[in-house]
Amino acid sequence: MNIVFFASGSGSNFKSIHHNIKIGKINAEIKLLVSNNPKADVLAYANAEEIPIFIHNKTRFSSKIEFIDSLFNQLKKANADLLVLAGFMKNGLNFFRSIVHIPKLE
Image (tube, rainbow, N blue to C red):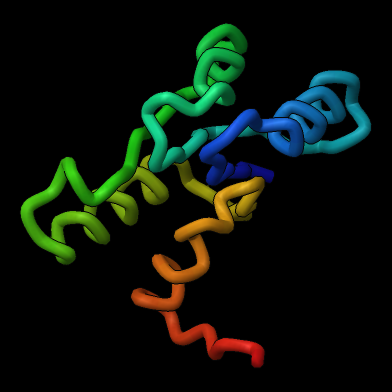
């Protein structure tokens, strides 16, 4: 299973899952780490583990279409079977709500 992670902080969930993949408890491969925070601590870990990184934040794109297309292109390249929101909750759900209908639970 090809996994793409979304993380924007320390990456404790990402690191834990990655560790379990490395020791064979989870049969998967992390194909990409996406972060909206270029200063996230998780990036150093992913870099050291040679996991591809994609910084995806609105400041890099001139339109919402370019912003969304760039992410979809990266997900296609990664051949993602599963997307994991690992601490990407600050704006992650709002982003996904903007491209896929996810009703708010209130």
